[in-house]
Length: 233
Image 1 (cartoon, rainbow, N blue to C red):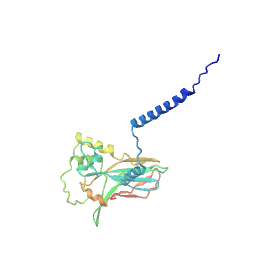
Image 2 (image 1 turned 60 degrees about the vertical axis):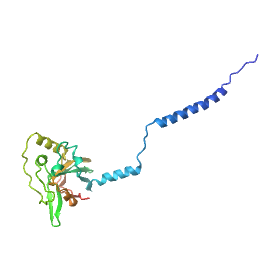
Image 3 (image 1 turned 120 degrees about the vertical axis):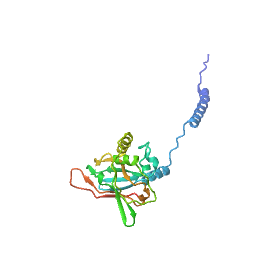
Image 4 (image 1 turned 30 degrees about the vertical axis):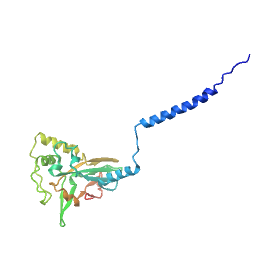
């Protein structure tokens, strides 16, 4: 008696097209329902990077890079000063960063930094950075300002007169956002805000420079060449 041998080939030939169809349909469904993830064009990333660089002015030599960016947008102050803004009181904040790429710690004389600008062709003035208490006093007692009047600067800073809760709050905010220290360790960065009482005359920034004359190597009687950063660009 002859035996009937089972041949799986016909069923396998039928199954292969079915499986292929299943995977094609499944792949199409996944492609349709997957969340789109479109990579950002390289040109857009480059433009954004260039835009970021253009917002800050910087100078670099002897292993130290100092960048400075005046805050000319009132919205920039909102995070650091949620209630009362120094900008509304005529005080300018300049965001600075000190990046030390050298192998030695550096010390920056923060008190000797000056914001200089021209009142006219023959009259150049300088402003000292404000302390946190002076910022708080200026915010709480801004006084009346005439935006068309040219006042000779620097103006005398009156001693703080309000020691109440509002004063302490603004003083703390100004201190927390300020440059924390003039010491910049090797291969590190220190950044924060410097404050200048512009009396609301922010148009003077068209000729402004940030002058940093005192930068020295820690533990050595050796200073770096001064920095002068053009803020008018």
